[in-house]
Length: 300
Ligand SMILES: NC(=O)c1ccc[n+]([C@@H]2O[C@H](COP(=O)([O-])OP(=O)(O)OC[C@H]3O[C@@H](n4cnc5c(N)ncnc54)[C@H](O)[C@@H]3O)[C@@H](O)[C@H]2O)c1
Image 1 (cartoon, rainbow, N blue to C red):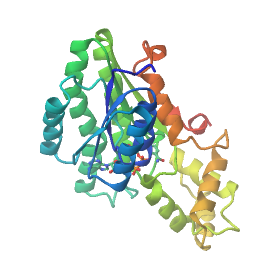
Image 2: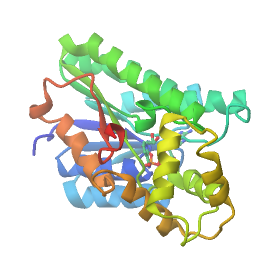
Image 3: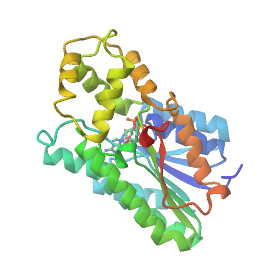
């Protein structure tokens, strides 16, 4: 297994994508250190699964990435409990709020930036030190297609995920001669807890029902969202959609799926396996990438 002897730290360890990344890394032979806000049932299940897969106990430390002292505490705890250092850092934790610029409070803006951008910066800065000394390291940042495209109603998310792509490229350029690569992954919608506000808002805004929530309308909605062209032509369509009610989560997700050129969702496992690839010898000379994993959504 290509990652035997490496140690990875995964933030958002108890989340949908974080769980899949941790499992893929364990399958690759990696030792796992996880962090999240709390020791949830998912965290416990992940730790059991990792033990089963690799025979190695995963370590877990609570950390609130909103809080600088908590981040400092995490770094010093890992320094004492994992003296060999972190070889692979996956900055995966993230938060999302859907609202207009008018509705966005400074407090909420600061929160988006703190979790989605400042925490990856602070953790990269800390853990890159031992990677540089060893002459080998991997930093992988979970951005989003929202970090590549304009996305209205997600001002804090889009800004912080775009910033994360900038952070990725800057770290990549700085650490390239030292054997440390830094890459970003940019998924579109995946079915994990973080997208619930999107589904709720979409249902509310389109008032979508089985009859009206079809590929065409959702396609228009997403295209409009993507290019920020909500104008007089599109508004009557949205107004008409608002009159209807009642689509289920499954119906909404089914319509999301159909808007992708490939007509398929990226799975969390595919993201986990791509992280393993980025840590493999095959990706040794790949750095500064911001790879869409979006079924072609960003090219149409
Ligand atoms: N699911 C999607 O559609 C999608 C699409 C593109 C990008 N992403 C990105 O993927 C990453 C993982 O998201 P997910 O889909 O697994 O969602 P998720 O909600 O399942 O996971 C998010 C994780 O971040 C953690 N987190 C949030 N605030 C935190 C804080 N203050 N301190 C510590 N941890 C905190 C959560 O506890 C959770 O474990 C995020 O960065 C997200 O922006 C997700």
